[in-house]
Length: 275
Image (cartoon, helix red, strand yellow):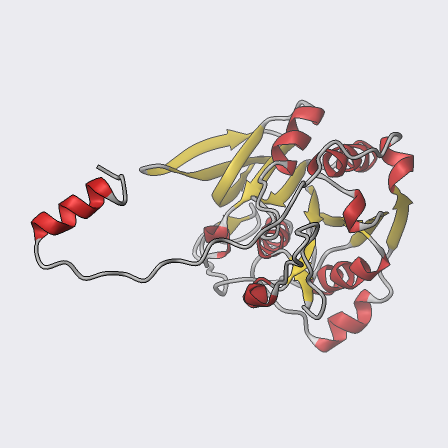
């Protein structure tokens, strides 16, 4: 099985309180913040690795995992990190962050998919910086591929994927035949969430994503990493999405104490306008 995983680097979400917005509101200032792989994309990579291995012998790749990102040269650090954890090859699409929107990313990924011909594309459900949750859906539409979003479980059966999707009220089970696209949610990295046909169902993974040992980090420096210009893949790289202004959320007012239920109901009706 061959799986393509799209990664995006984002400013460390654990330090989101350090993000600055200038008075003009023209952009978000993330200077000084550490860059890391979008958490949901890390879950997508972990899912792809589990689907292409026997869980008891994870150092032996039974399929192929190709990782791709769109961004400047600095994003190669993220790709090398993915290679160190087990991905076989990497592709970087050369572009500056301020030259991108979801449409262009989806168009570029479409060309990569057409060249690589993977059985499945696996992405995180969304990026934690923009939170637009659109690239996966747009890519599936461009490819005219079946898609399963918000995957909580993945199990390989005869070259197809049985996907457990998190929906309101429970989990919806779908069978996705190749070629297909999946976006994954947080629960996908639970110990028994993803299994290839080669992994014994009684086997349990560690909770969360795997980390690379030092020898794997050194070996990742020798793995293939190709670079392709964005314009070569999409032709017209004109942005069609524009952010007009950024502003911080308003400060929350202090809470008040009420003496009884009647006063609470009155404030909910007259001030909060919720009933």
